Length: 155
Image (cartoon, rainbow, N blue to C red; front, side, top):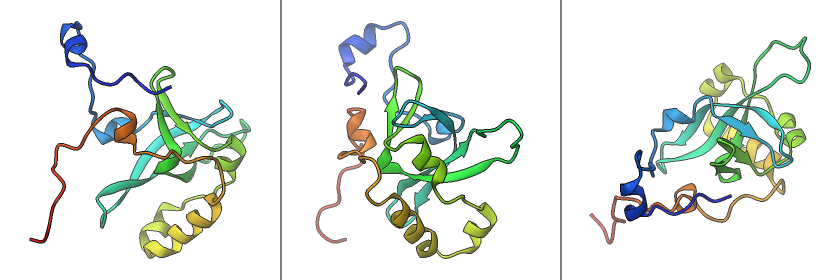
């Protein structure tokens, strides 16, 4: 469900006005649910595209399926597959639990030492044709506009 668009009159009268922005680190620990309704883990981090200045992946720490498994598995989920589920208090991923669990595991040490194209190609190949990514940005979904005007012309 998409949260209600910000309404200055409604929000100003509320005892605790509804926030329309949040710090990125607040995603850390947020529950992640698959499209089939299963809680599959929690957000461990977000991966930024330094060239484009935007979030491109969410790093999800998967909940072990078996109690005997204690290792924390990390997988990347493309940002366009993630939406806010304000009612349930978490993030909704537009892919099944089996798809997310089957994603290539991320080794942070190996990832930090590799070139971007290695893991980007791997993730793009894995998620191609999976689920239904959202057609609009997370900010648009929240009813927000960027406070930074778009650049026009050349500098």
